[in-house]
Length: 94
Image (cartoon, rainbow, N blue to C red):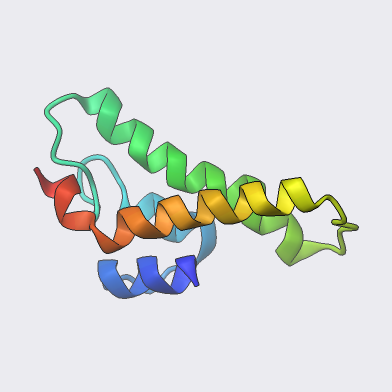
């Protein structure tokens, strides 16, 4: 759901980590922060790319035995935060 939302809002066609790198690219991404601090703009891009690379990709590329409810809830909370940031992306443009 998060990947679909990033793709829709950014109007890009790439996927997974590359999509987040493109969408939040600190200089050219349609969802980039407009902060004057380059490190902040990069941090936003790294946050999304890191979440996709660390949380999404392992589950997409191999069978994982995920039976820790707390871990699952934490992943849902992270996804919820990122989705909320994408849906309110106009705050990034300030």
